[in-house]
Amino acid sequence: MQQLSRSQSEDPLKFRTTDVDEARQVIGERFYGNFIDVLGTGTEFAAQYDIAALGPLTIGRLGFGAEVRIRFGELGSYHVDIPLGGRMAWRQGTHTTSVATTASAAVFQPRGDTTLDRVSSDCPMLAVKIDSKALNGQLERLLGRPLRTPVALAPELDIARGAGRSWARMARAVSDELQADGLPVRPIVALPLQEALLTGLLLAAGHRYRDELDRPASALRPAPVKRALDAMHSRPEHPFTTGELAALAGVSVRRLQEAFQQYVGMAPLACLTDVRLTRVHEELRRSAPGEVSVSDVAYRWGFGHLGRFSARYRRHFGELPSQTLRSG
Image (tube, rainbow, N blue to C red; front, side, top):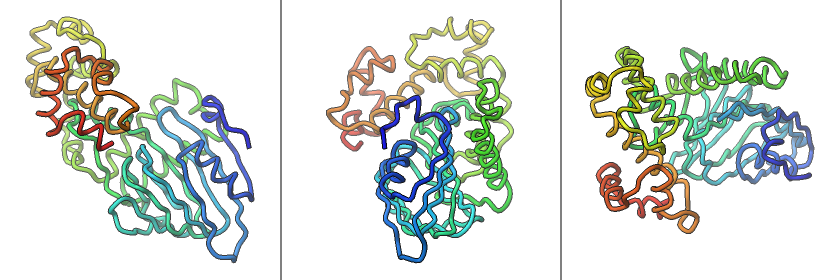
């Protein structure tokens, strides 16, 4: 099988094979590197994949025909597996083995070695890969402030009722439309759907920010503040001034400063610094020593003075940037 180019890997895919190596390679190209072990001899391995990309999300229906074990390393992205039948035993990092069913989906973090210990032969699943930067950026926009650390989602999602059930239904419907070359392939429809899936997961899954998201006050920030925050999150490396942010927000500098103090709790440029620090932290955590340097990453995200940057970073995250890079 030929290696897919980046553009090809974003096209909708309908894939069928009885070859385990081919099945493993496609999951590696569309999702993550992996090893597939066929368990038992009761049924024949027959992989069926229907996979499509929606911006920062990859959504696929995956079935294997036989009982399998799938081993991954760290995923590097958030991920939700929704069984459409059967059962799936899984574990990640220090999290002990859990069982996902049609009533309870498995939710994976970007970090931590991941294993699907036993996927039953009657367990096709809807697999949703979510870009880490996109999910955390959406959470920052909903909260109206930068995060100190990336969000950690609860490892299980109730899809039998409530918001979890609604989100699973939406993901399934979007998957169907993507495979049919329906409306989601058009940018004017795709962008709102991406945001709806990101926001819906943040409102359905458990995490430390759920109570804050559920409070109505978080939706009451005035439009000028939201416009300035959107500009910061879209281009945190840009050398914004308070005057430029005020112009983008459509208010005076004084009004923007007052609104940020009232609704965000800090000045606009202090908020911008926090956004940049978060971006640096995310990139250093994803990188390995030798791949990048702290100085290059800092400059890329708009920090011109390394001494002041390191001091701010340590106050913000409780460690030096070099320590974050080594831990990555």
